[in-house]
Amino acid sequence: MSEEKKAGPWVELLKYPITIFSLLLALVIAKPMLGLQFGQIAKVGPGGIEFAELASNQITDLAGKLNGVRVEIEALKKATPVAQANPDQVQKEAFAATQSVSNQTAALANVSREVAPNATDPRKGYIWIGDFKGTWGKTMIGTGDNNTPVKLPPDKLPLGTTYTTLGNMVVRDGLPSDDDDYFRARPSLGVIPRGAPFKLVTTPVGIDRGYAVQYWAQIEWK
Image 1 (cartoon, rainbow, N blue to C red):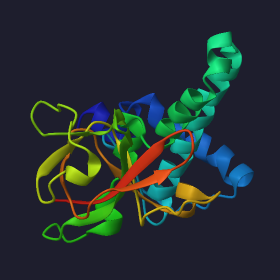
Image 2: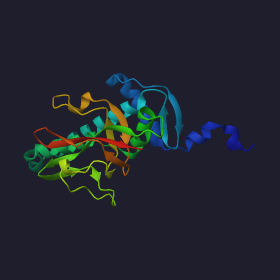
Image 3: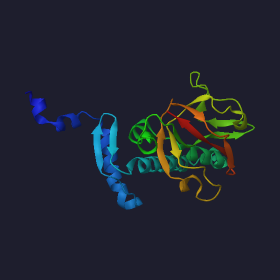
């Protein structure tokens, strides 16, 4: 038996990206500060960390919140006349950052474990698909043809057509309400990864937040 085999799983763990262990440390710190509860770790591997119970949706929410805070901090650090003159743009960027996550987080927060353990069932949830007011200010869905961003208005997007995600999009359990809590009141189900094909289940709904009209849609994918 080789020395590597004798060393057992510890040698294998050392091969995995340091980001996994950094995230574990961040979660330990975040638990008392943010009141988050995480399940037991079921598996650590090249694809990330799998938790036995509740973790992936909370990882997604935490990552989204941190992304949004990062954008706001960067805007404050710049504090240029241009940034001060365009507070709406800062809010748009901060919001967008809360709805998509890094590749590392996407690997951890796999929707399939929570939503559709049976692989034959389509997974469903709601995602933010972009900002639209006459034209798309920002869109997070593509036509499926080389990830070309959609051009049609939200209410003209055909249902049942295959689209693709242009980011690692946070999937939520329902349509957000237009109030102070907004998307924060809708628990995360995990992430649909960048480039994943999906179909629109319902016509997208626009929510006017003042700084942007943000469209949400129910989607399904295999």
